[in-house]
Image 1 (cartoon, rainbow, N blue to C red):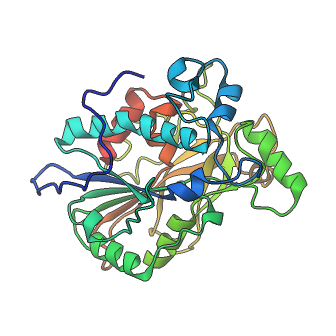
Image 2: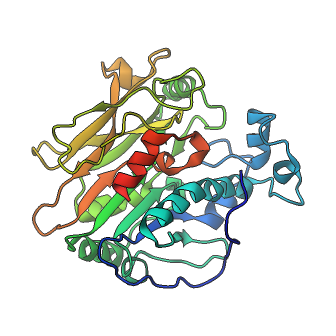
Length: 337
C-alpha cells in the first residue's frame, strides 16, 4: 500500500464541514465497539474477527513484510486485523474527497479509547451522504437507541439526504452444526468461522425507521475473472434504476461471503432490488438448495411519505480496496457518493 498523501491523525474532534451547493458531505459510521471486537478471546472459535497472525498464516506470504509481521510495527492480535479495515477504506475516502472537495470522517460507535459516539446531530449535522457499516458481531450487543432512530428519521426528512446501509453477512444462523458446516464449505474462507453473525446495530436501526430488509447468509459470488478480483456481472434491473445508481457499473469487487438482502415486505415499490449477484454453484448452500441462483446485492428505497431521502443497501466490502477494484467499482462509488 502506498503511503497516504497526508499524515494520519487520531484522537481529534471532527471539524464540521460547511454546506456547499452541489458538493456532498460524506461520512462513514462504523457501528462496532472496537474494544468489544479487539478484546474477544482468540480461543473462542466463533463470532470474532481473525487475529493478524491468523490472517498472515492463511494469506501467506502476502503479509510477511516487516510492516505487517513485525510486532513492533503492526499489532498481531485481533486489533491488527481491524486496522486492515481502516487502511483499506482510505482509497474510498481519498476518491470521495477528490470528487467532493470534503474530507470523509470515519466515526466508530465505540473507538479504541472507549469513547462512544452515538448517531446524533454531531454526526448528522454536516452530513449529506451517510454510510453505516454493520460490522458489529451481534453478541457485542450494539443496538440503536430511540434517540438515534429519531435523529435518523430527522436526517431522512431532508430532501438531499442519502443513507447507505451495509449490514455484513450472517453466517451460521442455524442451530444445526451440519448446516453451518455446509455454509462454511460453500464460502471456502478459512478465516470465517462456522458461525459469524453481523449487523445487530444496523438491524435495530432498520427496524426503528421502517426499512423492511434483513441480511442473511454469507454467499460466495460467481467470479468474473480467473484472478478472483471481480465478481461475475451483476444481474441489474436498469429500468427501475431511474436515478442512475448503476450507470457504468457492471460488477462489484469479489468477496467470498456476501449477505443476501432479503426484502421482508410484500408491499410493491417500497424496495427496489436493482442488482442481484450470481452465486457460485460449485458447492451446496441452503440458499441455493431452495432453488435460488442469485442473491440481492444492491437495493434502493426511493423517498416515500415523510422520508424525503434515499436509502441504499450495499455491503461494506464494496467500499474497501482490500477486495480489489476497477473502473466499474469507481463508477459505483462516484454514483453513490
